[in-house]
Length: 318
Image 1: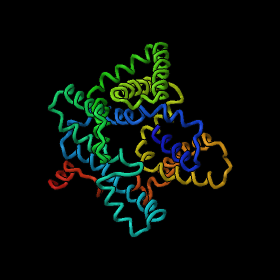
Image 2 (image 1 turned 30 degrees about the vertical axis):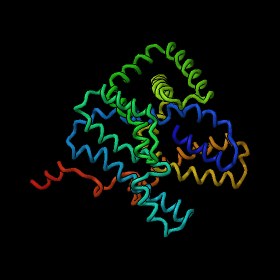
Image 3 (image 1 turned 180 degrees about the vertical axis):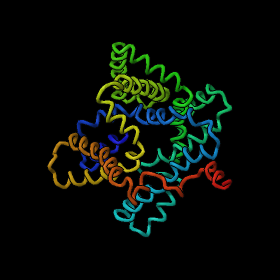
Image 4 (image 1 turned 60 degrees about the horizontal axis):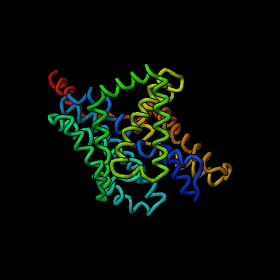
C-alpha cells in the first residue's frame, strides 16, 4: 500500500491528472501507515527481553545502517544528479540525519520505536496505549518529521507489540468464521469509504477509529488469504519488505519517466499500476542479482556493521 501510494501520486503529479487508482489510494489512507507500524511491532515480544547489546544490534543498528546507506544513494541521485549538484550533497545528507526525507522516513522511525518500547517495559501497557492514543488524537504538527510522526504512529506500533496475542487470536477467529468476517469487511469498507469521501477521515478521533478498524480489516484479509495461493507472493514480499522499502524509489522513478516519455500508456490509472508493479518487483530483482556478490551490502549488513558482544567475548576467551 505504501509503494502504491508513492507510485500513484508520483505519476499523477507528473502527468497533471488523476487516474482510476487514485480513489483506492485515498481509501487506504486512514489505515495504510497505522497497519505498517502495527505489523512492525507484532513480533517484537520475541526479542524485547534480549540483552541491550543484542537488541540494539538487531533493532537499531540494523535500520541505522540501511537508512544511512540508502539515504546516501538517494542524495547522490536526487541532489547530485537531478538536483542542486554534487556540491549540495553534504548539506542534504546532513539534513537527512535530523529530518528524514523522501521514502525513508519510516525506516528512520522504526529504531526510535524499538528503543522507546523497550524503555517503557516497566510501564503498564494500558497506560502507554492511552498516552499513545492521546498523542495521535492531538494531531501534533511541529514541522519535525520525527516528532510529528512519532506522535501520530507510536500507538499503533506499541499496540502491535502489546496486543500481539489478542491480534493472533482475532486472526484465528476470522479463519473460523469466514462468512461473518466477509460481511464485517463489507460493512467496514462502506464506512471507511463513506468517511473518506465526506472528507472526515482526518478528523480527531475519527482518524484513530478508522486506523484501528482498518488495521483489523487488513489482519482479517491476511487471515482469510493465508491458505490460498495468493498468499505465497504476498508472504514473500512481506519477508523481504525491507528490500522493497529501501529500493522501490529507483525502479518507480525510472519506470514513471520512461512511460511518460514514450507515451505508450495513455491511461493514468494503468500507468500507475505498472509503475507500482515495477516498484515492487524491481527491488526484488536487484536483491536476487546482488546476493552473494560484492554488492550484497546493499541489502545485507556486512560483518563490520554488526555489534555482537557475545560472539566477541567468546573469541576473546579462546
